[in-house]
Amino acid sequence: MSAPEHEFNSSTPGLASLLQIPGMVFSPDCPARQVLQTVTSRWAVLVLVALLAGTHRFSELRRKIGGVSEKMLAQTLQALEQDGFVSRKSFPVVPPHVEYSLTPMGKEIAGQVETLTDWINQNLYRILQHKQRSECDITE
Amino acid sequence: MSAPEHEFNSSTPGLASLLQIPGMVFSPDCPARQVLQTVTSRWAVLVLVALLAGTHRFSELRRKIGGVSEKMLAQTLQALEQDGFVSRKSFPVVPPHVEYSLTPMGKEIAGQVETLTDWINQNLYRILQHKQRSECDITE
DNA sequence: GTAAGTACGCACAAAAAGGTAAGTATCTGA
DNA sequence: TCAGATACTTACCTTTTTGTGCGTACTTAC
Image (cartoon, rainbow over all chains, first blue to last red):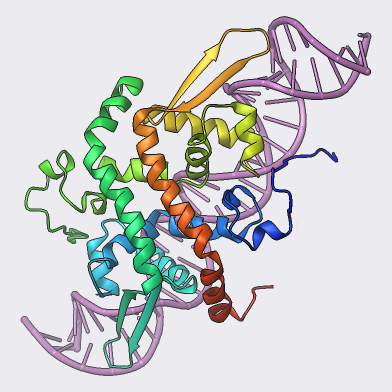
């Protein structure tokens, strides 16, 4: 008990959460952590990249992103909307019609995310070689 | 049953897993998905960025990354090592001494990740404003 | 008239992630 | 001599995430 579990080198612990101190994400209580988690969550990454291609409807996204359940997609979209990355436009028509698109801020961050996914796509072969070397069991 | 759950616009489904077809990550079975998940997992992001500053020992990382448990850190490091992003050097000395650093590939991807975290750090204030505006109901 | 599509919300269950505490082996410092 | 640091591993348990299936309100297509 009473152990100093973690120490950071920030000289102003309280303020660090509100300013752009490099390494803010290293602080466990900083809201940046949560934003990072939202953005890098399993489906959010894919949603952001998908929306970079333009406005989509809910089920368009669902079809585009292989493997998402409706629940997860809805949940992810809500989280992204809350953080201001995605904007939702709902038309009160008879068969529900909702359109999702990136906000300016969303476009910026989606760009970064796409760079990442592109890198992975391009270097997948290299990565897989490493994996097989260290694993030696291929998942068929 | 037998429903066409998901369709992708890739014209060569089997090959798509091995080539750089944009949108590979949208396919649920593509290994790129798993790599993406490893890299964007909660702690891996922070480990990558931390290691960008140079070689670290296990407990140095643990102190730097606020909030990680030993278990999670070890697990994350192993996953990153398996994918070839992190290299581990262990010295068989009496008090265990192990050094972690980024591989060339790790440096590349960590660079992308850092760009992302930097963006979040820099735009945190903007994001938080959006959040507060949309939340307004705290789940108490 | 029945099925399917639309965009979800809700309840329940399964799976995954994560935390806690302890153990290992050995040395150092008090 | 006894705690503490080192780099983990393992077992156990809790929390979170994710999936499944159903319901909704209404329309169009068959």
